[in-house]
Image (cartoon, rainbow, N blue to C red):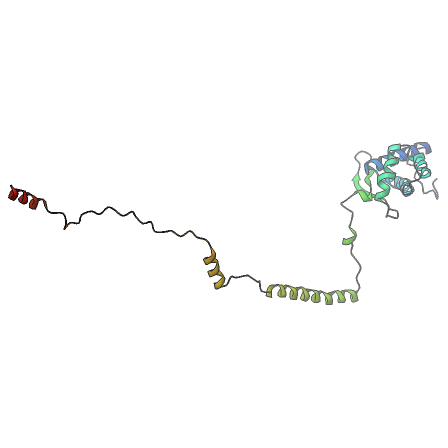
Length: 217
C-alpha cells in the first residue's frame, strides 16, 4: 500500500523511472515543449525545476551535478547558456502544464508541458500588467483624467492660434527686382537707306518725250 507515499512510481522500477525522467528532462530542455501523460508531466515538473534553479549558477560543480541527472552534455550546455539567462529573474515556476484531452485506447489524460518563458502567447509584458486599484485610487484617476485632457486641448488651441509667418515681398522690393533684372533690350533695326530714286514728278511721261523728239526732227 502507498500510505503517505507522495511519489508516483508510474508502474516502473526505480532505475527505469529515473532513466525515463532523465530522458524526458533532456528532451524538454532541448525542445522547450513535449507532449506526455498528465501523471508523467507532474513527476517531471518536480524533477526538472530544481535542475533549472541549479543552472542559474554557472560553476563547474553545478554543471557536474546537473550532468549526473541528465547524462546529456548538449542539454547541460543549453541549460547553462540560454535557459539560465531566460529565467534568471523568475523565482521558480519554470514549467507550465496544459491539458489536451484523453488518449485513444487506454483513455489516459494527455497534456503538454513546456517552459514558461519560451511561450510568447502567454507571456505578459511588465508594462501591460494590471495594477489593483481601490475606490479612492479610481476617484483620483478619474479626477486627473479631465485635467490632462484640458491641458492637451489648450496646447492644441495654442498651436492652432499661432499665425504662420509668411514672408511677402513689398511692392517696392518687387519694383526693384524688376528694374535690376538684366533683360536684353530689343533695338529697332534701321533698314539701310535706298539710293535716291526719282520721284514721280521728276520722271517725264513717255508720250511727252516722243512729242519732243518729233518736234526736234
